[in-house]
Amino acid sequence: MRRLFIRPFAGLAAIGMLTLSGCGTQTAGDGADPGDAGGDRAIRAQRVMRLSEVHEQTGMTLLEGPTFDKEGKLLVVDVTAPAGGPKVLRVDVRKRTSEMVFTDDRGAYTSAQFSPYDGRIYLTEFSRGDIVSLAPDGSDPRIFFSGEVNGSPMNPDDLAFDRDGNLYLSDSLGMAEGEAKGRVVRIDREGKNATVLAEGLAAPNGISFDTDYRGLWFSELTQNRISYLLLDGKGGVASRHTAIRVDGGIAQTDSIAVDANGNLYQGLHGRPAMTVYSKTGERLATVEVPAHAAEGLESATNVAITPGGIRAYMTVSGPDGGYLYSFNALAKGVRQSNGG
Image (cartoon, rainbow, N blue to C red):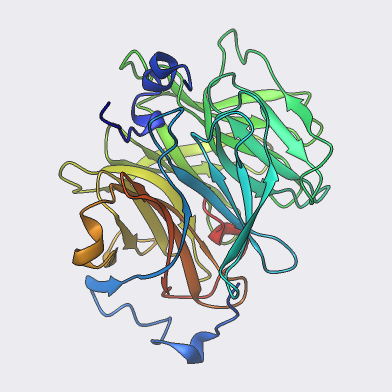
C-alpha cells in the first residue's frame, strides 16, 4: 500500500479517515551579523538528525512545536505518532540523541510551549480540542482546558503565552469543511475563562507575540497571509489588519516564530523552506533545505532559536521521515522564538 504524507492541519479530515490507523549556544559572533539581513537572501539549512520515520499505523509523520527547556534541550512533537509511540520527544542537539518524553493512546498534538506561570509543558490537541499540560519531565498529564468556546468546539493548532501565563491559541475550526470559521482564542492562566479575540479566519495556524507583547502575529493556512492583532492590554483587541501576503505558490503558511529584532520566521507546508520577514513586511531571507535532500521532504513547519544565541532548529518532514535542520537566524532567540 502506498504511504501518504498528509498535513493534518491542511486537512485534518485525513486523520479522521485514517483513524490515526511536526542546544546550541551560538552567539551573534558565530555567524553572519544578526542585524544585517542582506535583502531576500538564501540561507541553506544543514541536517542535524533524523527524529522519526513514516509511521506504518498512520501512513505519515509530521514534526512540530520545537521549544527549548531550561537545560537547553529541545522538545519536539510528532503529530501523527501512533498510540504508544513518542508523541513528545526531548532532543539533545549537541549529542544528536533523542528520547521519548510523553505518549498516550489517541492524542494528535500539534504544538508545545512552556508556561512562564507554572513552568509546565502545554500541548495543543487538535482532534479533540483539549489543552494538556505536563510536568517538565513529561509526567503528570492533566487536561488544562476542554470543551466549547462560544458554543463551538476548538481545533487548537499553535499557542503562545503572554508574560503572565495566559494562553493565546490559533483555532482552526472549520478547516475540514473548507469554511472560514477559525478563531484566535485567549484562555486565562487558570483555564477557566476563554475569550474569542478574532473569528471568521481561514484555518489560522501560526501564532506568536511580537517582541514587546503589544500584539500577536498569526497566519492563515488557506489564505497565505499573516495578520497582526494589536491588543488593548486588558485581554481584548484594539485593532487587526493583514500585514503580509505570502507568495508561496503551492506552499502554505504554517507556524510562526519571532526573533529579538522582531523578524518573523514563517514556516511553509508544501515546501521544505521557511520565509523570513521584517516586522514592517520586507522579505529578508528564505531558509532552504539543500536541493539534494529536498525531494523527500514536503514541509518546514516550525522553528526554535537558541535562547540568547542565533542557532535555529527547524522541524522538517515528508515521505523520507521527520528531521531537524539548523541554520543561523538573523537575530538572537527570545521566548517568542519558540515557534507558536
